[in-house]
Amino acid sequence: METGLRNRIAIVAASSQGIGKATALAFAAEGAHLALCARRADPLTALAREIEGRYGVRVFTAALDVSDDAAVRDFVNRSHERFGRVDICVTNAGGPPAKPFLATTMEEWERAWQLNLRSVVSFAQAVIPFMQQQKWGRIITLTSYTVKQPVPELVLSNSIRVGVIGLVRSLAGQFGPDGITVNNVGPGFTATARAEELLEKRAAARNIHTEQIRQELLQEIPIRRMAAPEEVAAAIVWLASEQAACITGQTLLVDGGAYRGL
Ligand code: NAD
Image 1 (tube, protein in one colour):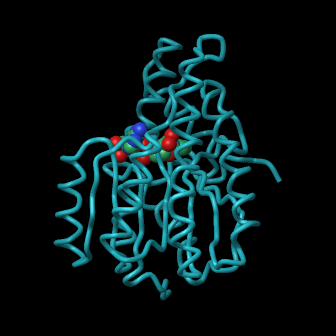
Image 2 (image 1 turned 180 degrees about the vertical axis):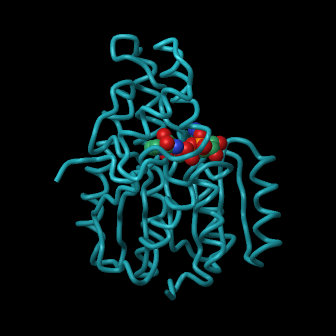
């Protein structure tokens, strides 16, 4: 399938590891040039060298926290200066802590909003004017299948990320006439450091072995395994492709069938 992504410019946020990194690699494999950010510079620099060597595309990197509004806007502007356009923006961040509701603090709610919703606002406000000038753009938010099916210990994620869906649908309606599509990808359990951390927390809470928790979890997933980060990345790349030009305002779950609703 020809994705039409060769020489497109793709921002991928929080991309030093996990799903973000897999997404950066997948765009590079399609010939897109990249602007990558994460909190630490060293892993990003190593990833940029790997991508440039393997795919011959250009990679711009910046170390920043996506909950820092000014830093995000500056990163988007510098990406535009570097490449002359911004075609695709994949928003991503770390997940909020897993905690029972009554144990959460107001500081954690504030932090979750800044990290997982406000950061999307920062990116969208910064990239949309460039995309409007180009009359072409793709914004893809990375959230979680918790936007459809709450996970008990993830009350912060369950609550805050639903706001991203409201934003996605609002922006899809408003900016469709400018040739901009806005969609959301919701991964289910995906084999990354984040998933391991959640399994270990569940095991510690019940004082049982992590392997037992893993087996219980897999019984809840019809395909009986977690997603690979590359499988989530493939959905993101497809939504950015020319083939997906007619799809906007949607949430695509990559969860092995874990969400059972209609
Ligand atoms: P991960 O922990 O493997 O990677 C997270 C990435 O985000 C890293 O590159 C990290 O450096 C970066 N990051 C974290 N906080 C940041 C910040 N404030 N500013 C900039 N960069 C930051 O996680 P992952 O599994 O790749 O998950 C990516 C997103 O998908 C997270 O929001 C996670 O909650 C969500 N998610 C993951 C799963 C899963 O099972 N892995 C399931 C559903 C949703």
